[in-house]
Length: 294
Image 1 (tube, rainbow, N blue to C red):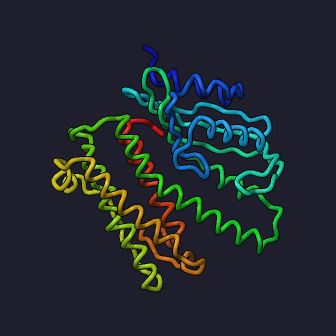
Image 2: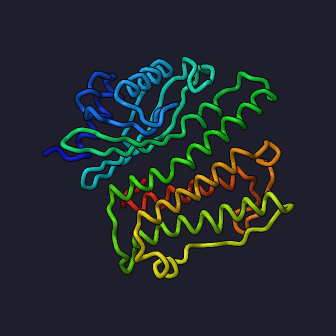
Image 3: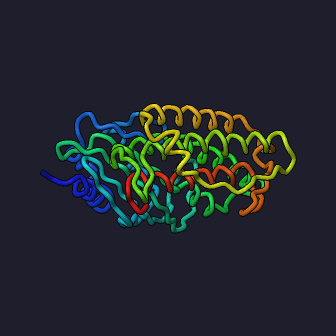
């Protein structure tokens, strides 16, 4: 039986290195679902092929390198580095004719040697925005803020799905002398969403230059409070709070996005910078859940 990682690496080789889009039909199950295609919540094989053609059209001489990988049971996770010349409009960004480098995390669910589900997250949009110098300062500044906000909210909203996929890949484990239990990690994500990120957003909205003290995860408390809890209940609770956070962010004006708070160890931050900190926190725990060094 073919290992999941071998299937995922074959996907990378045939689709992205050799541009053999017809191979998708062989590599993917008939009921393949892609959860991360632009403008689609439940993409299928044809939609993925259209997406891939668009990426090839937009970026000449596309180069793809595998930076890291991990597999467990019927899941494979890849960290991929991308490089290409931006030669056509993509994500509503005019071509810059510049070389763009970005990275992605790809999670594949594989059954009977075929890919049945895929999740992915990348930072391409941010790099496109940095490269685009064609608009005026005023127009570009407004466009950049808007696109950065949309991209950030999208990444934050996708985190619960990535956490679920990471748990499917890594399994549910009890605590050991050196590791957190899976329920305690998800409980920590839920508690942090409520007590840290949402609480800080509330303070930024209601106070001028609020002060945020240093905090760190309390492993013993999380194990006591969540270690014996059904992980699916905790996942649902975390997703509910994260959805509420994203809905709140969508309602902010540009002026409200620029309100700032002061962190004891990291200095002051506006709303976007605070949420980038939240995103980095989430990604580190996703890597812990899978055991991968992403």
